[in-house]
Image 1 (cartoon, rainbow, N blue to C red):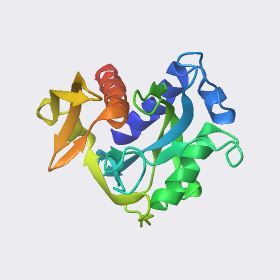
Image 2: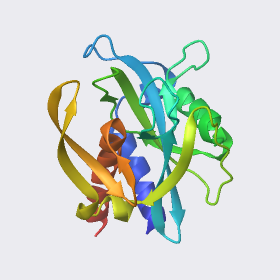
Image 3: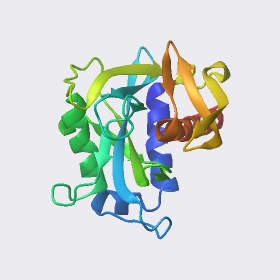
Length: 206
């Protein structure tokens, strides 16, 4: 079942992201918002006894942006180092948690999202990674790494919507909460996008 879902996910990402090829070969920014900074993250999936898990990191409290928040490995596109957004995601994954590009099977890209406070335009690349895997965390960027099963993330009891005060404004914020972990912001939206797609694929297979 897991293999079938991953195969369907690869096909769906190729079909729904008609510009995915452009994202993997060049930096492509749409005109809205015009000041968005291109960035990319790796969304690592792995299988444990037929149960798909997502790998997350907790960012170091010393980082200048999004300190201490749950994230996917990734960062700002560096055109002098990265020929593509996919190259950015792969480089950052190796630097942050020690995932080697040769061990990563990239399935495709989800639609880019925009972060409101930091104004990044993030392209998420969904990928399969081996399990178990000896991660190597960069302590300057990553406090820790952890994984959650998709079935836990997809449980309605895990999702909470609250009103937070951000930059002086009351904002409705949806987060995933499980065993003390809080996933919100861009990482929550990327996770929700992936879960929606996987749910639709499973329904089609049934």
